[in-house]
Amino acid sequence: MLSVKGLNVQYITDEDGQKNAVIVPIDRFYQLLEDINDLAIVAERKEEPTISHQEVYEILKSDGVLSD
Image (cartoon, rainbow, N blue to C red; front, side, top):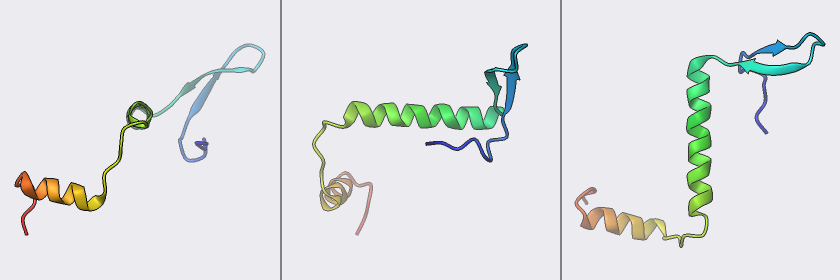
């Protein structure tokens, strides 16, 4: 679970003191959006077959991305 500590957030409260919104620094907000997007991609791809590191290496070599 993500800790609020270190996020430098501010809360907006109602007249009863109940938190109902949060203010997050914009750069941290964009980092959080990126994290959410990454997690969504992982969830979408969780059933895909995996390949070994060696197979990835060989594919990248054959595509010319890596050299010997």
